[in-house]
Image 1: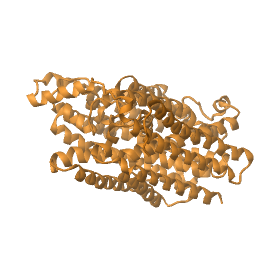
Image 2: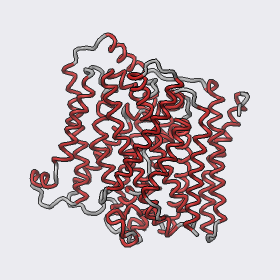
Image 3: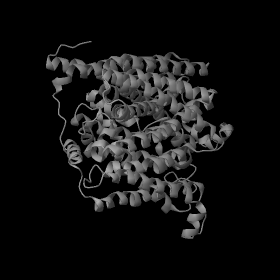
Image 4: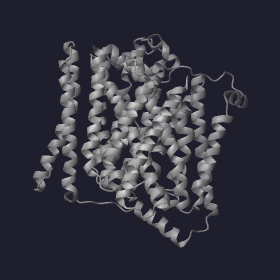
Length: 590
């Protein structure tokens, strides 16, 4: 019975997501609308999508497993994300919006020229596909372990739902769904965290009863390696959230002020998140729940079921389906953003520039939908490939991808934002150097090499080796790759007149605020509030009605709490429409 309920909830949620793409299809008339909402979105939508791009099913699988095994250590990654978003708020977010581009590669084009436009167009796509494939595979692991769903089928169906929503509604549907999914995820996880705290008798009991050192974890011979890992993770997450390639999060904002507020919202959510998301994993570890015995077929990946096993054991019937829906939402939010971004880069920086310079907007929108479909199928294909690999830790895979593949690209994308006098070839040459550094760290550096070089008394544990590899990769890029980019200033001999004008445009735009009057887009602002507000109200009422499911009284009240949180946010959005329209005396359109 419970399985049927959970499956029905997931199915209804999928239909809900598909409807978002359909409702927002009318917002798109050109490529600017399709890829960045025409630069007319409000801060709470932009902040939600910025937050959700750093959030996926991996949080509830690989990261939850790390929390189950090693306690607080995993929260460092998310606190580092919060620090990155704080820097968004304090400096970067408004300046990213001020670049006044449709795609991030157009900013690269202004700063580093035509050659780098193509280099960054094609070098960034594999990393995005790999990350989305890992997220999608993590989701399939959970669905298979809990419900017995076929993993390949789960990957394909989930990928196709994301594909339909993204292709149909473009960035409007992507960002609107991110906001709604953020609301549902936070409501579900807050509810689960409250139950975990209540069941444990308080956070203090969780810490005291945790099977290993709660703050450091297990398998540590050298505390210095853990400390080094913690420091460099802050460096890595700062670079990921504050470079031109990831500035797409804020290109959709209505103006500089909305971009700044969006950065603050993402910072607040990410600061709160770890203490909410990982409390269930910490709790079941402190209770001595043996996941290896519960999921023997998962082997080394049994920890990935930490969060789900909490919901299965301690939460009322139906909550598991709601959580899995939230996990699907988290993964989809990362995937649809990646689809939309990759499609935008292909169309605006290759198709329009190289293949069809005179293409009409109608043609470009059509090609955008086709390219989104192709990239979506590529992500599904890679997720199926990842699924065929056995014994690979999702946590480690995500860390390796970020440190050894993604990080080299961020070096010129962040340093070029500040350092002006470099030759254009500095950008692509830095990528080459970064690729060599990644190869040396990823292939040449082995545990035996490290132990012999530094004459360590104790062998490195598996965890220490994993942490050290990530740390060395990040530090190597910080010193060697970034050092190389700075050194190219020695070869700067000026640029052509055309290029000097483009670089000057880049830096003038960066420092010139985008300002809009509230009345200018008031009707469209209220459309955003209206559509999303009513969608969230429907979602909140649907969750609240789950109190009718056959559960004990406390279980029924759990759904009332969760639904009430969602409903309150929906009502607040709709209420803000009435308030603004009344103050300004503007006739609203439906």
